[in-house]
Length: 331
Image 1: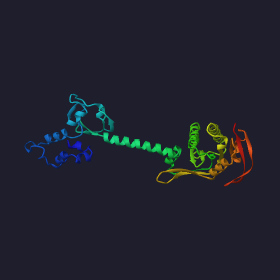
Image 2: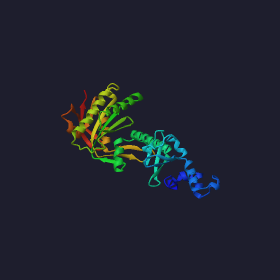
Image 3: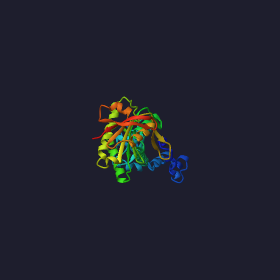
Image 4: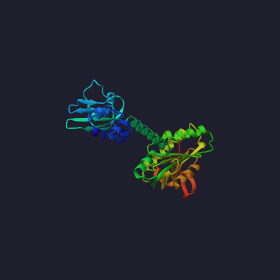
């Protein structure tokens, strides 16, 4: 029977005074020395072992069971269920408990089945998995999900792309918190219809919407550019029910490079850097009411798709110098 103990976790053995005294040969506290025989001692040991133990033959007939096994199979049942005849790391038994099963061949005819209750361990694993999901949920609120996936694959906390589109929506002298929240909600609600939007950021009176910072979009991809324009038009139309035309302005820049990544702080902060972000801000600040202000490089890609007019006069962009800019006229 000592063979069974080879398959039992050592912690379970060392915590049992009975087992340790039997192994050490000190039986005096438990048995009458005059009746001391291997068979009696070890049968007594197995009978009182805290984990369920069965000994069964090739026909799956139960030849021995200890007291703990009665919680698994009633005394009136004489055969062991198939599920208990295979060694496995974890099963959920019909009594609602998780068990790890050890199958120990005793001889050519018989084997033993030892069940170690895994319920506490399973609860800890379940709790751990739940906490991981909560962590991922909270992390997704701080960091774009697509960036997390890229970071997992590349083991990098940063991403450089040669071309991205940035929309900047600037609020003019808006101090009503409810209106600011309505703008933020409008941007996010419209985002649901446009799968290629990567990230929305708010700071001060500006809202930045990033498009293509993970996808390495070629500047020749007019479909991506049109999607950003269409999104901006949808947002502007929705804002008309919240703000007046003079309460906000929109600018769009499409250029690069753009660097995005996680700043290593106690709380992870996701940031995007690049001259094109400042250009989008400058375009929004100088936009006329009821228009979307765009650069010439963007105009050259979409000039025949929208109602566009020259802004008039060169605009001096901080990082690009004098530029001819254009306005998409909103209906």
